[in-house]
Length: 278
Image 1 (cartoon, rainbow, N blue to C red):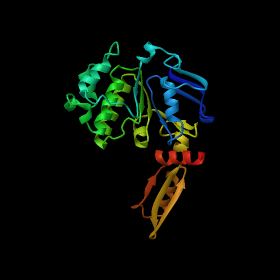
Image 2: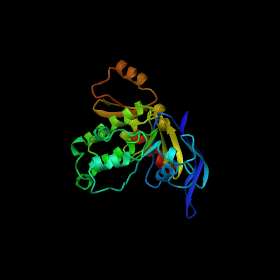
Image 3: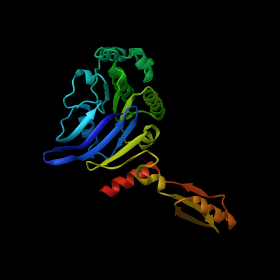
Image 4: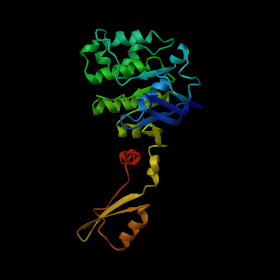
């Protein structure tokens, strides 16, 4: 069963096409990451899926409905964490979460949500007194308070310190374990690799690669770099499978104390993909 189904999606601004006929499928319960440089069409695509922007062409189904015409009942089933959300500066964290919870038929308790995003100690603090990272956690709380079937996360950990980011990853995993479908956009590639079941790379309004973090862009078959020292000289070879080379070095009684094996990282693959497109 699919939570998101897109065929031939197109969108242009003043004659410039920023989304160029993309196809996309996201399964229910899946964590899907959408990657790409600024201007690649990620935000436009996500806004169309959320029902906040009209498309120029293509077919889109989100939770079984066209987001361009779906009504209130459909909107209660999705949660949105925007990249730049407005603040209710004079409300406390608890007041704001309770206020937004009132828009849903069966929301999570406000204190439970505040605890989930790590703001229990700040629940009675006014929004204007919070740090940037703490305000970002409030944004996340507002996105999940309605128990959404589908959660859109646009750069959710911007402003988080490393510890807070790891805590947020645990929250995402917990939501996914409950069956929540999550569409994530992020510039942190380690975040995408840690969380996503699958991901796609957008460049120039087109999907240039799609797959699991391990297989994206042929990463799984890209081979490995084997490095070692031979008579004081550093040597490196790119091989499909390092096993045979290591056996050869062992037979030659080479010094293997400095031997290292490295494979292309997700960042290497991503940069190659968007570089090739450019």
